[in-house]
Image (cartoon, rainbow, N blue to C red; front, top):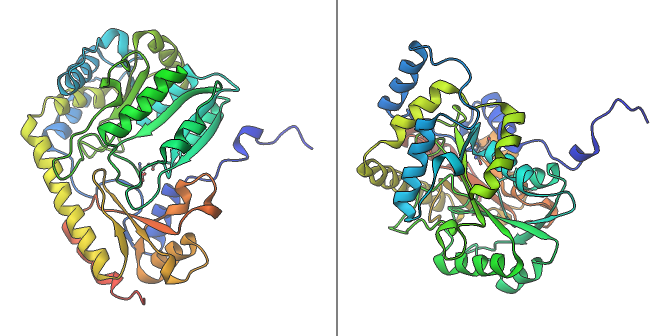
Length: 387
Ligand code: GLN
């Protein structure tokens, strides 16, 4: 075999499904309800702050861990919402999106040979992130309709090899919001087995029906064993800016920062300045954000129900999972291809959120982070679906 070949670590990785579905959406001129990004505008003040920063020549490398003002803003915002003090200098690292933050956390906190517990279905990066860190992902299923886990299955997943567990609440792709009781159970296992909790909270502001967003980092005993990742992308509708962060115990921050510095040096400077403006938005704006998204969720659920889909109502994030087994396709990927090519609506096949797509339930994910007109156009097109 030639020595000039791809590394073994990538052989188990599938191509990212999100970019591919967006490509197919463009190719077939479909309504794109696949990749999770808004098709509406970002807040004007935030955009203006980015433009101003560029015009003021904030165009060179930022400090690698993020500008002081953004790190302070992130620390103050998290501390205020979760009632726990955060020291920006010791705990906050700004990365190129929360996707990079997750990678930097795994590389910075996990050793080769360790195991990382991951709930699935999940955002497709967690498994590859663990593998890139030399660790072995161990998957525990969230099951419909409530997308909760079986406590015994979770307990069995922990062992002396377990180094970390990844939690994503509100959850992509299911919309599940973990309850305090569920998080307490996970936290007690982390304490029992001396394990790190890595909590992806990118949808923290998009929670419905007056549910609270609980961070596992705020539970008793967890402040020193939880890392939270989040970012500007979803809350401020700027997924292309790539500003994310990790909030970590001081003892773990050094490792995370080294990885981040070697991976990307620093996040984009002008967007960090805009991030300070974003994080200074008044509390009412977040109430309005959640209410707007809740209206979109309700519209999406209504559309999907009218077209014969069995839906799982999301408690947060901006996706709806639907069951598609009854349509009689050989797989949910085949169904998603039919939807994008013949019906003109792009979605993400649910099996791509599982480590073993063949044993996954047949579902597809609809993203409703879209203008009302976009959702209405999807409604019109879905009428052509035979059931
Ligand atoms: N988080 C978004 C989604 O789940 C997109 C992420 C990506 O494109 N990598 O669709």
